[in-house]
Image (cartoon, rainbow, N blue to C red; front, side, top):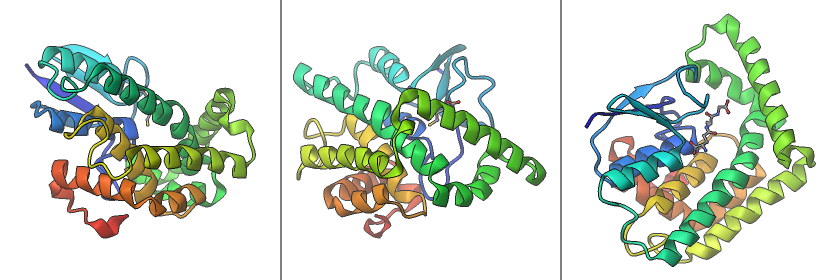
Length: 244
Ligand SMILES: N[C@@H](CCC(=O)N[C@@H](CS)C(=O)NCC(=O)O)C(=O)O
């Protein structure tokens, strides 16, 4: 079986600046599924226009959750097979919270927050490998599209302090739920841990301060969980406890 993962390139010491891509790559390493990675510059070849997507023996599949479901089915439920049905339900609910709610606060954090938006532009050029003169146009077009998405999702209709608070509440709930356990759902890592570390890592590792990042840093159990996942699955990135 040949598996190719298409995703953005690594930056800021993180495997990926997309939490969905990072979650999937972490899962692939957890499941010890052989694969190759191709760094993409745009999403033209993705059937849904989103990353990540994979090519498995010529079959293209998008959506990190659907890809993981497919791989679990075809590889003997290597990662989540050990979870009880109740643990699977909790894992799904919390992943949905991160992906369908916290994610939008992170989109606001990276693309709309005035402090971050300006700082992010030079990185967008690097991220997508754009020629310099195109960057302001692409940045403006991306920002416009993203703001439209944030408004139609709903999070973008609130004032900044309400948006930050919505994300901080999610992170606090995750921290309380994890408590002092090493892994989220069992005594071994599961797709939940891949997802949690991808979201926490993306909040912590972008180099600009904001209320969500400041609040997340205070949850030392989440920081330690992120470092645990990185140390185990991405040792080549050399992350240490100080990163948080
Ligand atoms: N549910 C999808 C979400 C993927 C997603 O939203 N990816 C973002 C990057 S973080 C993307 O490709 N956005 C481009 C766009 O929406 O145009 C998954 O789990 O893979």
